[in-house]
Image (cartoon, rainbow, N blue to C red; front, side, top):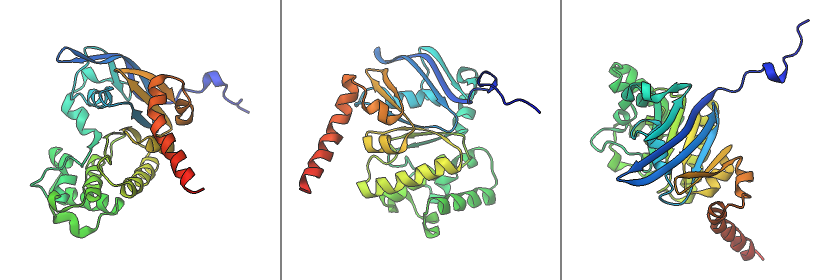
Amino acid sequence: MASAPTAASVPPPELALALSGVTLALGGRPVLAGIDLAVRQGQFVALVGASGAGKSSLLRLINRMLEPDAGTVAVHGANIAGLDAMKLRRGIGYAVQGGGLFPHWTVADNIAAVPWLLGWPKPKRMERAAELMAMLELPPHLAQRFPGELSGGQASRVGLARALAVSPRLLLLDEPFGALDPETRDELGDRLLALHRAQGLTTIMVTHDLADALLRADLMVVLDGGRVVACGPPAEVAADPHPAVQNLVATPLAQARALAGMGK
């Protein structure tokens, strides 16, 4: 009978993303400094930090909208510096605050934008758009509407559907629900987490909502001044004594205490 594998013989989990020594300056201003980060396949990562900490720039490096001055970025084991930038981007889901939709394209055409770039025939594109609309609970009659006719929550759902159109393994989200009311944001956050798990995604989300990070992420990364100052399970990171971490958690903790006091 074969013996059980030892710890040494078990292969490590596949890394969906690995950054090593990544440095970036824009207009002569340091933005990122010596970033080292490893993300396993299937993790839900929350990138948090004060405004200007470098969170959005880090996302844009991953899909080569920006190029690092030093260091390497690897996606699924491949150094992206050696990959075609357009092909890389088309294989990574990317959504921003407000959806970033094309205003003169219908909802269906917005969702199917990347399949269109990839040359999918129209019937296949529309079938995929309809499938994603159902997945994100968007009513079918919205397919021929334009972005200006949508609510904020609907536009965010369309943006997320577009990011998922070609079944990416890696999903990058830059404050996708930041402009929404708390109830809608919470509903979409739950839907996103369900999709993340069901589709086996690796998700990296920039957020200023600490509740999002603490409740949904399994890895929380805190940036401060372009550096990673804390990284780990959210509950552990929230207890980190670093001043940047404590400044981030101070406000939501104070709000929670105030709400608890109102019930007395």
